[in-house]
Figure (cartoon, helix red, strand yellow):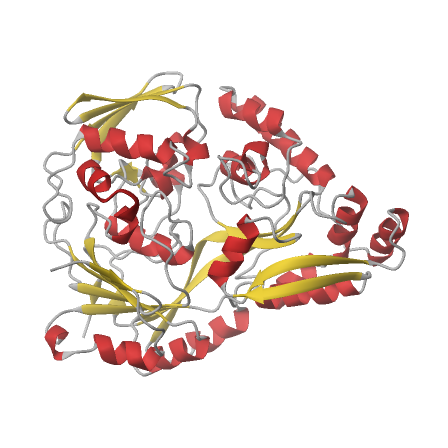
Length: 518
């Protein structure tokens, strides 16, 4: 089948359903998945949006993997590698690959050269969004066709997470990536249970089962990944049986309502996307730390958590997400104190208040929260001037430094270094070649973050991470809010083939064991 990546006009959810539900697929087992936004690309070393990550997880494998349904690092198991060893100090790792693992299409089988190419690519800031995480990878080489050696400059916290089936750890076909170049994300080639077939802008992406998958051919023949921005349209499509799995609304009342509907199952799972308000310390009036402190004290996090629901949005205590190795709450949170917030503004020379510009996504996971924050800040004399745009535009403008306050949610490998390095190290500041998704322009804890990365003593490492968090707290680079859990709605006829408690790619894994029952 010819792979197509073509642009068409935006169609309605009904038009999408009609176009995809045709007699040609009547005998196939088709899984229909509804998402709220379009994908931005399917290159696994670039994909950072939730809508991108799900399909990437269906198409690619790492050297090791999180078992389907788990986001627990303690449960990591073999994937493309059948075994591995490491030196006593954790700076040298050797992986033995499985034999005859087939890439999609006619791109051959996985060799050590593909692994070396993939991890080198993941380390390259010109080709990878996640390059900063691989800075300690000093030497990556093929010992023989089925053996890969990795030498690290220093021990890396949670190293196996960097070679797992997540972000830069995904292995691509060297031949395909070199042949397709910048267009690889438009026709990706992996080894996973499903292969890419077609993408139509703002309508859908199609995936079909990989018959040669090394764990066995999938029970699902075809996945139709549909982009339906309207929540009402997605819910209608699910209720009428036109969707089997749908992105849910992460609100307590919504979960309770749909849990009572016959034939439906609501899945709430980890990791939570850690919601944080990042403050642009280079944009007036936030250049004054007293103004940033005023913002922090004017935000009532307890009220926000009550609005979201404690089960789906538990409160955080640090800029490092709850439950991550190295999270430290000793600095405390910013107490809600309107009187103090107003006093700080007056002290900073703004007795009549300030105005802060913020680019805000219109997604249901962001806009309602920012509207609550807008109302809270107004009570302290802080006017939040919100420019509401679609989610891709929000991502683009935020990375162009167009926003004074950025509300952002992310889930990463659960070690403190991943968040501290990606969001609060100077190498991640907007405009730097190593920037990933940082918006707070924080540069006060570089020494402590770097010390923790190379520290072999676990106690000293934890101490460095704690020091970094205290410094970031004092600088008020960001205001931590809550962990927003993942919520999906599925038909009770859809059996994942595993128990879903977590998924680092934020979308339920569809594996060779997943099936639709009659």
